[in-house]
Image 1: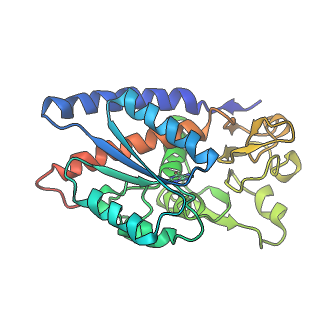
Image 2: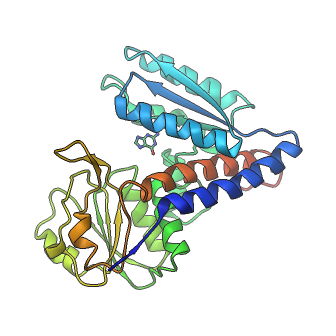
Length: 287
Ligand code: GUN
């Protein structure tokens, strides 16, 4: 039986230590502030955004939401981002994705100053991550790395197989795992013989968004399983990408859904907002 990686408990522990850091900043007259922009009313985004606002509340970070109409023009979105870049009371800016299709999300991300890029999505942050410089790391990959640290899962020399190549999860995870000296393979919708890759993996990180995609016959005994998927099954129940019940029997460690990676993502956003605030007030910052 696998050790269940308790992301919910770890995230709670991280939030309470961030609260201490936030209280310290407040003693110096600094209140960290996160600005969240949402365009349109995607139902899943509404849930994510509500969870982010709750976490800010718990840590003591000020939270400001900008809800834009689904017909918002690109220039108006960019103007708002520019205003928030200039606003010294705002320390972090997050543009919730997805946004309506008539808008160019990469152009919008690019407009966010890298100093406030708490999602780690701007080209500057991504580039710095690739060359191993200190930067904001995308929250889900950062949360996954924190889980490895907490559970003493050493990636040094391990075969890590990442399923999915999204800009938010798969791609930054490549860099994060490489930094830990893993041998990294990325599989995606065009990968041939997927099972050959997953079967030899010491660690599988799945971020593809398909319920029960990773089955017990695809993994070896003792594998570490990180399930980033958030899906609904045929009964409307929240499930990950992994057939948890059967894969758990072969794994050494496994994350549940819910209560695994999800809460860690939000805790890492809080971490990035505190980091951004400290960097912005650090006269010697080389960020
Ligand atoms: N949509 C789904 N996940 C995320 C995330 O981590 N950040 C943003 N900005 N949008 C998302």
